[in-house]
Image (cartoon, rainbow, N blue to C red; front, side, top):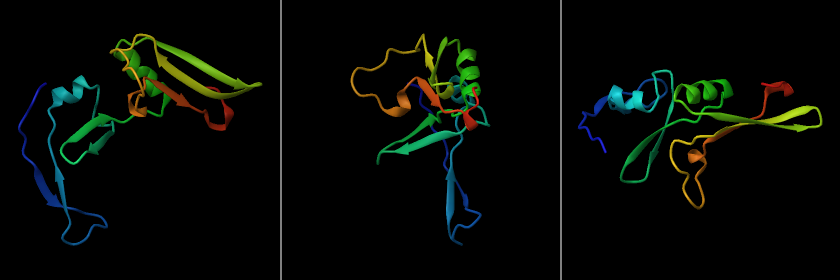
Length: 125
């Protein structure tokens, strides 16, 4: 595990925050973000368990973005399309070569290596 000591920066919060509200931020090492496949346009999910803060990539809801990112990382994908008659209802992209073995037992939603998306206006993607 790689560890770094970073400074916590404090500044006044803007927008509709109260007049004495403060905002805190950290600088993350660029190498870590690159290793995670993240850029400044990406969003992340923060979670706090009372002791530690965890940063995770936010799951993509754009199937083409998901496909491009996965293929850039060397993952092979299988596309499953489910229809109701002639209407496309769901598209699922699943890893064929998952980077790590999947855990045994219940799997939290954020750990799944698949994306399910219903197309807009019933148009196939």
